[in-house]
Image (cartoon, rainbow, N blue to C red; front, side, top):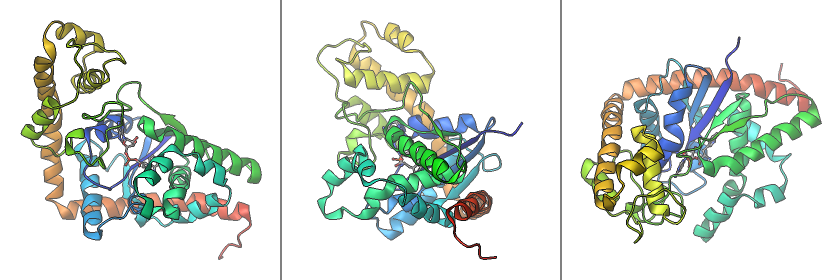
Length: 331
Ligand code: TYM
């Protein structure tokens, strides 16, 4: 039986956080034996926000190294850089022509990002979810592992697949999101009702995958909690709830086990043991990450072979699409 197809992507718009790891990267790794997985560094998405070219280049290789450091095996999964496969931009254009302005206007991420940067309300930021749909549909993905924040974008991808299929006959697989019950939305350590984000101006709000042991311990110690003082898993204690989620995913303990373990112990003990859990989980990833970064030839080999594999899959879909919409084949 043919394996089902998985696609996902991460933006190289800065160093990755434990939110990216818990909500996405970690789950990517779990899928690679059972599925035909395609994991992309989406550099074309990243330029919807101004990027310093040399940082973009560095961050792109960083994300690639982090993919492998967190366990993605380039022999099992197709690992590549979005701008190396022009079919993404090409399909994106076609999908733009079947996307309604109203749909894009409703995207909460666009609304939030546009609030943050008035001077950068570029058209790319607006049509970004269409490029994302192109990423997914090009590979005929059945499943898309993502964090909670991408759910609305996934709905648009499904909608565009269905619209194209009904207009031009069956062409695209309609993708389904894979969103974990735990860890799909890791919150800011400073404002636990907001998502943890690498673009937060407060560096204490997030833990980076590259943070040192001291930084991790310090950030967890400073994490905003509440004055209730007992380790409980409730919406009234969003800070503690978030820390329990992080603990649970990284330690493998259930929420109940964690609550029992820290009952009557106060936040200080909980936080310092959580710091150990995070440090232990990140330590092997950081070691491997550094090894990959030090081996630029290997990185180049991975992304160029990945681009070849991705390109042939993507071209196949694009050829079909062009034919269906009535473009004359080049011959
Ligand atoms: P990006 O780069 O913002 O985030 C990468 C992945 O990390 C997840 N994530 C989180 N999960 C839990 N808690 C958090 N605080 C947290 N922050 C980020 C995201 O949900 C995502 O899965 N548009 C996408 C990139 C993209 C993509 C795609 C994804 C482009 N094309 C096609 C899937 C399929 C984005 O900006 O992710």
